[in-house]
Image (cartoon, rainbow, N blue to C red):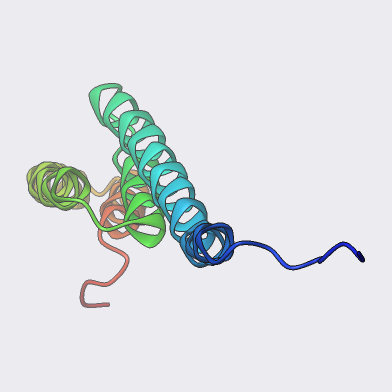
Length: 123
């Protein structure tokens, strides 16, 4: 009597279920990897922000959002924008004082610093 090389139906169903579910496990790993990378970038951005490096912090928050949108990165961007606004106001006032004192090189330097904090602003 020849051996049958057929698998029981239950085994075939289980194998099919595993094959269909395999992409889901991969997607879950990818999602977890994106979450970890977004968290790493957001943490880096927070540290840069605390050090006063607002431009670099903004870049890292944006990179985090590019990987995976999170409310942490969004709040970080908002906080950086508010801090940059305050610095720009201070730099503009100092530039005005330098200009009034006819220290045009210093005024120009302060204006360039203000412009760097708001690259999308008027100008």
